[in-house]
Length: 193
Ligand code: AMP
Image (cartoon, rainbow, N blue to C red; front, side, top):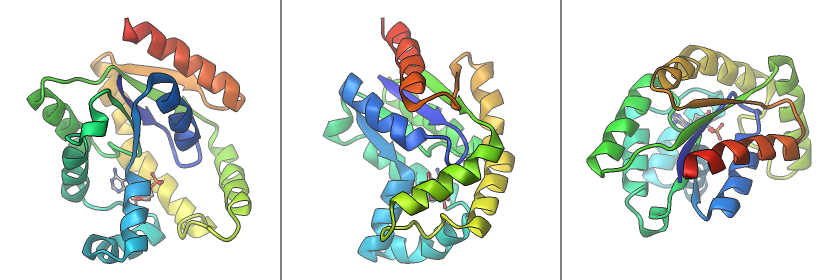
């Protein structure tokens, strides 16, 4: 099972990815988590991208494409993966198709979490409170505004990209966490056959 989770910041991609990977015995590939780990480790890449992340802007396509291309070759990805936060731009989506095709693989589904934008700020504020002590540098009003703007301009075109190739499945992301999971499982169970 190989899938992409699409949706704006705060839509619940990470929460749903954590559940999906348990059910389908696959791994979660969260590019945000991977980049934050680089920042925490103060690696050369981490030092390079720290300010970009804090501002809510995007790291370069080349960096992300290389990161994912290396990651999917690791042994734990053999049974599949849920991509959370990648692709985020059309060039990344095209590169993903290409890297999968080169390996004789394909995406089984692209799940789009559809949410009301007004609810996002509240959700992210809740996340910041729940994680008190480990607050994300980009979970503040200014960076969130930027992240939403970047989502609209750079990532929203992927909805069109994936609906054209017939992979897109939309789910009501405003439902309860359990209901969203149930809708996603129904979609993934059906494509797994
Ligand atoms: P996330 O945890 O998915 O919200 O990602 C946090 C931040 O990491 C984003 O605001 C970007 O700065 C960076 N990032 C994560 N994934 C990507 C990506 N696919 N392309 C570019 N930047 C990314």
